[in-house]
Length: 216
Image (cartoon, rainbow, N blue to C red; front, side, top):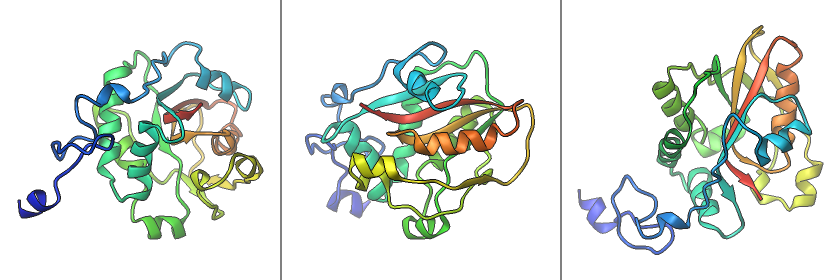
């Protein structure tokens, strides 16, 4: 297509022209800091979650660092209107996680309607839908509702991230379910904590966590 010739897709790291379905070239791909966590074993994400709420399993695909390639990838997804990035990260996830015990439901952190209208899409939905299709686990996009509008975590310094308050609610009372809660970046854990305790109001529910990246 003419647009592809005029505006070719380029590697986020070195600016080399690459396929439209890629984010980085093969030379730069090793620069992505993948976590190498085990979904079913103790790892840094699970340990941090356990300080906040009961968690069954936890996994982060990448390590998130300022100015690193992982940050560029997440920012393409969230702030550069590159929704396709979610599908690519999902494919990386599928290469690294084998579910021997499947959760019942995939749920994603919701955007406030005002932010959803501004961005045009929830950056987690294509990611979760890709996983849902492969794993055969339903993704309930509207199970969670965000009741308050907040400034993006990535735009705050660490002190103000700790001060942020969240207000979530569930749209359906489900019992005895194992939820896989999905978010983009785990920073303070405030978001996960608020959602987890809303779900765990019913003690028969269980929660596992999957994030695209963990702030290190």
